[in-house]
Image (cartoon, rainbow, N blue to C red; front, side, top):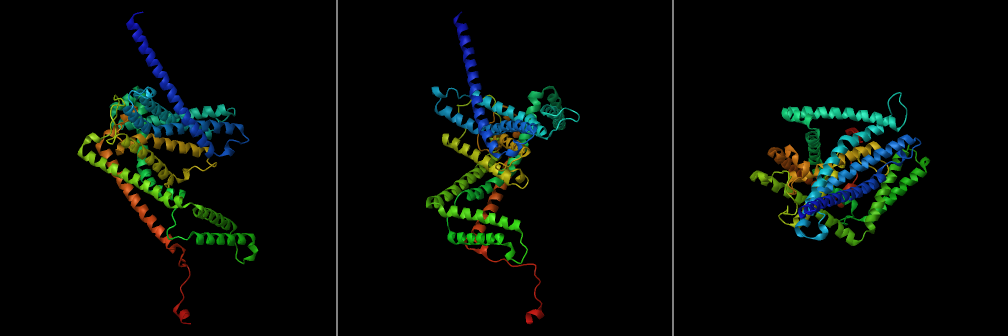
Amino acid sequence: MEAADYEVLSVREQLFHERVRECIISTLLFATLYILCHITLTHFKKPAEFTTVDDEDATVNKIALELCTFTLAVALGAVLLLPFSIISNEVLLSLPRNYYIQWLNGSLIHGLWNLVFLFSNLSLIFLMPFAYFFTESEGFAGSRKGVLGRVYETVVMLMLLTLLVLGMVWVASAIVDNKTSRESLYDFWEYYLPYLYSCISFLGVLLLLVCTPLGLARMFSVTGKLLVKPRVLEDLEEQLYCSAFEEAALTRRICNPTSCWLPLDMELLHRQVLALQTQRVLLEKRWKASAWQRNLGYPLAMLCLLLLTGLSVLIVAIHILELLIDEAAMPRGMQGASLGQVSFSKLGSFGAVIQVVLIFYLMVSSIVGFYSSPLFRGLRPRWHDTAMTQIIGNCVCLLVLSSALPVFSRTLGLTRFDLLGDFGRFNWLGNFYIVFLYNAIFAGLTTLCLVKTFTAAVRAELIRAFGLDRLPLPVSGFPRASRKTQHQ
């Protein structure tokens, strides 16, 4: 065998080993995410649905739970996709010839983006509808009862839903462009799935546009509930005494209902006692907190939230100015470029870390805003008390939000890392008016929510600090005394 044949063989072996290494790394990453998501869903699911007398329902719920675990793992992978790519690029820039990071290359990053895109399509279009129809199915009339009968009914319903969605997307593409609609029928994989995912991602970006400003405003109140606030113009000892006194009075009234001549609503009294007990536990927690935790932890957390929120709004404002000055700031796809050549932040590695922190912060804020909105508040999961259909709904919504996060971050200018794979094929990303209007609406909604929340919070804190909330309210509903009665 000649030397040229040896060189060709060594190149093939090297490509084979690189491909196997990428598959192993991707499998390990996804297995880790799958285990974390399985533990999370296990703590939120309702145990009664998996320990029922009917083994068929329990089996169906277990299968649906595994599908939800897969979907949630894909959603978590979509959240980590952009931060992992940014950090990998900075690592390759800092250590270009290090032997221990040779596995980290552009081929692996591109493969992860393509896998997330594929699994997101698979979960949104097939797995989650299958899980929902599977839990709601009972089998065709006259067929043999069992899990297999439910599978047949679910497959038929899923095929009908697929045809319906395919027809709707084809009609929508025909309205936009007749030529592309014909191409979508001839090339299902290369055109239809990216176009459908583009529509779903656009809906997710619109949902992030509404939920993220609300979540940025709600983050301050949520953090205030989790941390111990400083004692400013507040007497905790007096509040503890009043809370314990009211709790003892209500408990005595519940134990001796016959001693009162008025009819008592026992259910209302029990709810009041539980509320007082919760309030007393929180007051005791604040009373036992150390001075460092009370006077340093809360101000630092509020300062960090304020800096992150202000920095996010500032970056969006700068991006709006860049769009007006130079259209080169428009998001675009990076199909052929490789990683490790140039930093995507003007501040280098420090700027890349700030980008990653902001991306995670906005994702957490969007989830807080999503569950705080009146429309989706009922979908909020409860500890060991979440129904299977509710888990499916949560997984779908989280996947829609997380899969839109790379597009959301790039549209707002939080990072200059261009979208890889099929994420960069979204046509609406190249529309200047859509991108500019999106940035302007986000900046306006965020400013409005923050101003409204801060003014309301400051007003409530001042009222509570000065004790104005404990003043007796004017009693309404009683007729005023007449002048004759007042004279008498």
